[in-house]
Length: 248
Image (tube, rainbow, N blue to C red):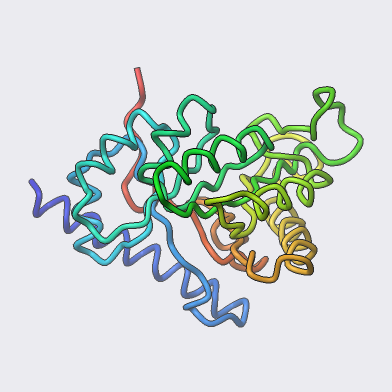
């Protein structure tokens, strides 16, 4: 069964690689400008091990309960773990123990918690500001804070403030920005426009933080749009691992 699964994953990775290469060629970008992150949520550690054998070095999870166990089981592998889900402060200590990059930073309280735990663990955590493109200026948001989107993330007008908090926090490194294509608002169903807007936000950020050049956007269905817009990292799950089993 392992051999069959390995073949399946190798074939899927080759197809995704072809898609990324074709998208880069179409956009006039070198292939090495785009890094594949495989989203392994709901799949077992055995799949992560096979992916590592097949050359994958970046994997992502969105739930700490699952990710912590998997990262521990795969501790011998040369992997960078990305945390991409909405992160509650009570899970920060655990996440800071295995994640190399937290892509879903969307509030100052989370920055404070991540900083404390990164220092305690003696680690440097890369952080991306998650941008909610369904929370553009003018939408009502919670009082006293930058507006949050339905899927997490800070409104575009709150990015600069949050980035400054990360950049000034001990144990944290400001790496760039991330978004999930919004389901509502002005960019719903307009993935390319959404990712182009993220690139504008990234350009503004790099004016004051030149090293924060990571742009994480695009998933299995819309990675071509993300590459066309200029994303540096795409997060692909289903196209590599198959359709996820339904959670009961």
